[in-house]
Image 1 (cartoon, rainbow, N blue to C red):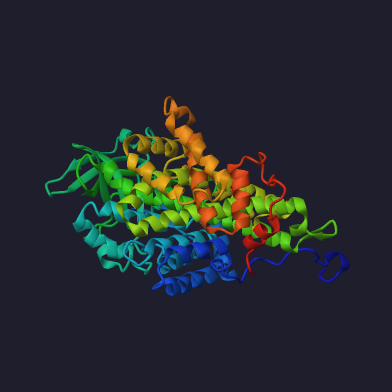
Image 2: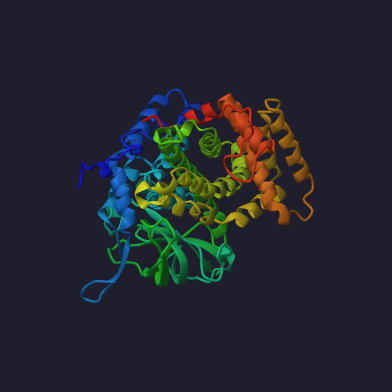
Amino acid sequence: MAGTPTHTVTNQPPPLVGYDVFTADRALVEAVDRYTGPDVRKEVRAELSALGRAAGSAQLQEWAAQANEQPPRLRTHDRYGHRIDEVEFHPAWHRLLGKGVSAGLTGAWTRPSGHVRRAAGFLVWTQVEAGNCCPLSMTHAAVPALRDDPELAAEWEPRLASTIYDRELRPAGRKPGALFGMGMTEKQGGSDVRANTTRAQPLSEAGTYLLTGHKWFCSAPMSDAFLVLAQAPGGPTCFLVPRVLADGARNVFLIQRLKDKLGNRSNASAEVEFDGTWARRVGEEGGGVRTIIGMVAATRLDCALGSAGLMRQAVAQAVHHCAYREAFGGKLIDKPLMRNVLADLALESEAATALALRLAAAYDDGGDPERAFLRLAVPAAKYWITKRCAPVAVEAAECLGGNGYVEESGLPRLVRESPLNSVWEGAGNVQALDVLRVLRREPGALDACLTEIGRAHGADHRLDRAVKDLFTELADLEGVEGRARRLVERLALVLQGSLLVRYAPSEVADAFCASRLGGDHGASFGTLPAGLDLAAVVERARPVH
């Protein structure tokens, strides 16, 4: 019974709740300040702090748990036997998604510093519940593809940028806001979308078609519209498929099943059938891959941002726990070996945040050099940051010991979520091959990346040596495909190192360059070399609570 000596609770840290997830992240705050103009900086910080307080609240953490404990269910038919193909979600899911929409996480393309403020918000929001970030990401990323058709863009962009969430299935023209999903992957093709077999038959009305085929993965199947690739007479083409037609009739959108996934359980991913499904062409026939690549690039950046957010939350939980937990006569955070582990994790998290926010800033700049930079840096960053997420989450859970293996801690959900972003929007090999493709076809992209890296020249001898090693790799592209991952890893690490050397505190940059670029590092976390100021690195990562 309560109050007996055997039930006295000691040496357990308080929950990490009731804090501002944004302002508690020093690296993120500094990046936002770095990339936003003085005219909007105060507004942006206030906006992100409000979102951060919501993200750190007990209420939203409870909603996140509820949304994952009670995942979506498919209802193919109503009680009378009519086909309806609807996905039912727990109310907590709708509350979270509505909050994300109202926070502007689908509207970056026309706001001042829109991509940086939205990227920082997305990184914060991922730490609450990553599943609802999928439709937020798809909706945001649909804009560049729609702009291939100015008429469609004028019609749909205001709905996508809206801060009003309307969950009802009805014609998008009658809704104050709309969400987008995407359907590219098919059973026979995977990432090879040119092998898709879904067919598009032209109708008499210009630009309209009927689709027939199957999509193996359809993201966010409850959305108002979808971007879909299909084979038109002129080749692979991008189409807009509305869920509900303008006259109120349901489009043919047959949800065969929902995927039973390792993580991301609050979010629905589906297999869908098109059988005479009405669609509107986006862009030119045969240009579908080119049209949709803008959406893919934006969602790849969101994969990097999402992984950076997951890593940040995992590190925050680990540092918070160790700041309170005592063992062997002192706080865990003060023990040299644990401090080494925490510092190592903190370096990975800060480097991911620095690179992801730099990419968002390039979107805001929009100039030719920045666009060239993005073409190479986005797949490199997506490859490396998402690859680092799973080991960080697992090691952070271990910092909590057995507590980290218990669902109530929240760490198991982070661990299950951690591999996903490396698979979404092209797994590691696809990203590495995209980097090789850009290197061969667009020399200006490499020049832009090297210009970015060169801004830190002479600041750290280990970074300079790593850049020389990168040049050696780039000089020999014979048989490069077999070592493409090695090349992309080096490029990403050098980009991270150049940013930390320029902008992070010296103790962070020193530890990163010594371990990641100088090679003084073991095969697991907690193997940083001696002589570094690890206490300062850990303190910087500690969430102020």
